[in-house]
Image 1: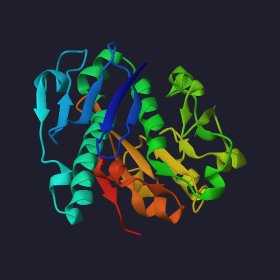
Image 2: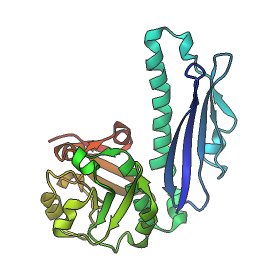
Image 3: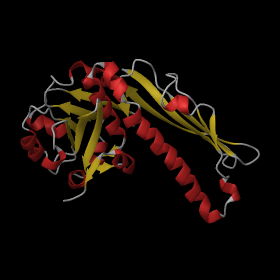
Image 4: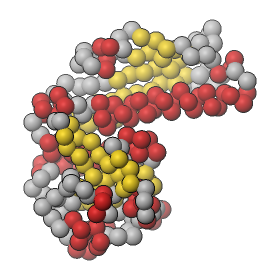
Amino acid sequence: MTANKAQIRLQPSWLGNVHEITYAFYSPHPSPITIHTTFLYYKYNRLQVDLAPSPVGEGWGEENKNKHLYPPHPNLLPQGRRSRYLCRYLCYFSRLLLALLLAGAITGQAYAESGSEAAVKTAFLYNFFKFIEWPKAAANQDAYRLCTTNNDQLGDSLSVLESKTVNSKPMLIERNTTGEGLKNCHMVFIDSSENTTRIIRYLKNLPIVTVSDEPGFIDQGGTIGLIQGDNRLSFEINLAAANANGVHISAQLLKLARRVNVAK
């Protein structure tokens, strides 16, 4: 799998410094996909957003080639509207990049060309970590633990994550996890061949995110269900289960879910 990056570079003249936010993600696409947007305040108080084409030369990048956006400068707005303005535009582009990260970057074409459904699922699991917050006790552990109940489905694709980090902490991959070992995990991928209902009940009220590709998984009490269809992979979220387990899921991730279950 190839490590790709989408980067926002913010350089407001009235702050006098540079802020950069980089989203690193993983795509099974054989060629790197890079989306680069640059926020730069010019001396004429104009904000330019450059939407650069991706090296792939198709899709997102090509149709936005040489496009620039020039929204009004925040300093020209009344004070009360500045923060709302910045939030609106920065949040918009953050959501846009996240959408590309979790949805657009893993397209049907990439899915087909990768030849590895397991690689796509692994990419989703890794990116879920970036938009989930665990309670203090779990978050303060020395590493983030991704566990699987069966090693057959994801196989060797998980190995690429063993050298990765989340929030500056290493990731540990624990395969074929059972019993008490499951309680030490931050996220558990439950193979559809397992007794998912039993495992969900066993982990109930613990700060653990359960993920599976079994149909109707979130309706059984699971946290995140992976949905396959039209050569693409999407997901749905059981927000009620996450809240009950003390896990906070980012609003950005919720907006990208195909379905969110909020009922208790």
